[in-house]
Length: 251
Figure 1 (cartoon, rainbow, N blue to C red):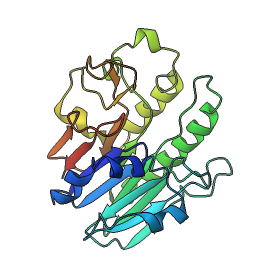
Figure 2 (figure 1 turned 90 degrees about the horizontal axis):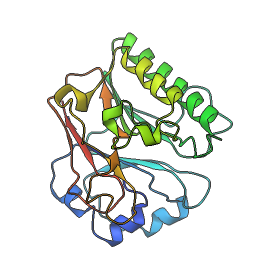
Figure 3 (figure 1 turned 180 degrees about the vertical axis):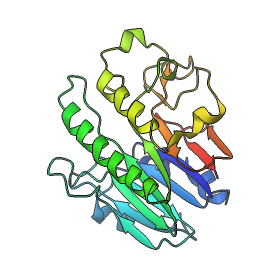
């Protein structure tokens, strides 16, 4: 399967700038997972027919212009879910998950909560993370193949961000967040990108501040994780249109 995952930070904006055209016109991807689409159900009627040949599955936030994920697929799934087990009163309605079942493969497109600069949502994030761990490990231990992709909002190791010491108490690099990824990766799943590349300097998010992306002062917070044998997992920092870059995978 060929997959592309991208936090577009507003689907309307990337459509206006034509930044998504290459993704769909290339014909290179069986599944395209977008995060932070920032759409509402009414706005879907205004979208152009840019995804011809793909079925699309949305999970949209109740709050306009906030969060939301969308998965475009040329392979018809056998099942769809948008919750991680029992509904969470806190993140319910934030549009953070679309899971598709393709026979023995579970593919999850997710936009993890941000714990916020004052750590006010750290408990919310860790609850979401724990629910995700149960879903993923449960499927893996049942003998299914599982791929989790999207914006995890966590830089795992010090070589996953440009300035680890300056950010040791920053949201996305907190000990509790990193410990959750340690636990996740101690199970059946592995980090697809790190299967092929161990060095630092490979990031997927950069601040919009002037010169930051040009100097590659970034964070690696977008992942492809799973228990499958990946043939390739690549970052595409040359593809513009968002403060994140796309990540692609082949397995």
